[in-house]
Length: 155
Image 1: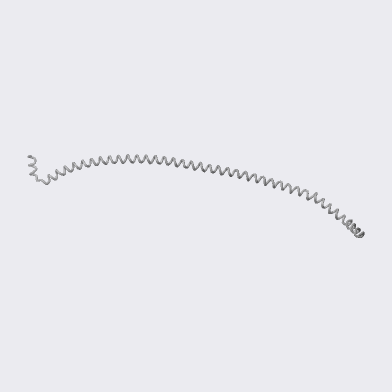
Image 2 (image 1 turned 180 degrees about the vertical axis):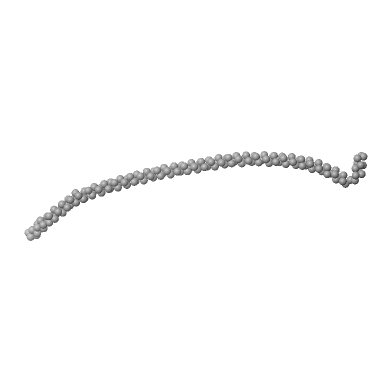
């Protein structure tokens, strides 16, 4: 066992420079690489997390603005629809008034035309009556001989 211990002690003594170099390398790694790398990763995570929070806030703001925009758009469309309906109603009322005025004017023209036709008919009937009497006299004058005209004149 003594021999084993002696070999172990020689092994430990022989590996001492390697262990010192390993511990030095480990310490140098910790000081030169690990600590700055950990700080850089923490800062990067902080920035990433901050950027994600900023992005989430921007998304929430954009969604709020989009909702507001949609509400304004809906209100504008409703206002346009109501304005259009009002214009159509006004145009319908004006059209109805115009049609009523035109109907009245046409009725007046028809009444005036009927009155004029009635007057023309009465005049034509009077002319026809006058023509009938005159034609009757002419027919009688042609049918009766002229001698009888003298007899009639004696009566």
